[in-house]
Length: 210
Image (cartoon, rainbow, N blue to C red; front, side, top):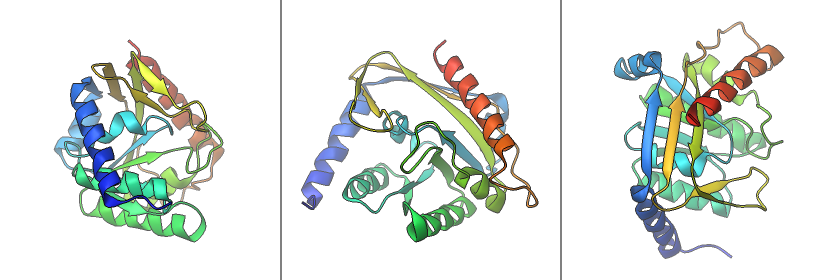
């Protein structure tokens, strides 16, 4: 059943009120702060499941992300745009390509991209080459993101282990030391790139828990 605009609005209102109650700290690596100050292109790279704790950053960080063309994607699209962010619609196959190209255009306009590395359908915590292709096309640095929160609701049936922080929960977000932009001659499917980024993500996650 197709959701109404009223339902979309209620979801946005619920999320906005909930996220306002969170006790949020964002820890930026000094080089990330420098890139942001200089308005250099960056991609915030995180695991699927962390997005509900990150969506509230869309306005202060001028975030742009890819949303699916499903009904759930329509809700996320509405919420992100309502919060002041930007979206590119796409999920798999041809739609995924168009979604990626949409993100390229948004980065070129000055937005900060945010991308779930193991999407859109997993496997869980398996990095897909899209983030490297996006960096190669835009010259964007890839910033590993770590997120932790003290109390949260876990969506147990979700493949990506999505969670939603409870009201008044402490949320600690780390933007760690980034990967340099992928060069034009580099292969986005190079396994070494995945290994390096996964190691950096693990470091960011560990730091977010301290």
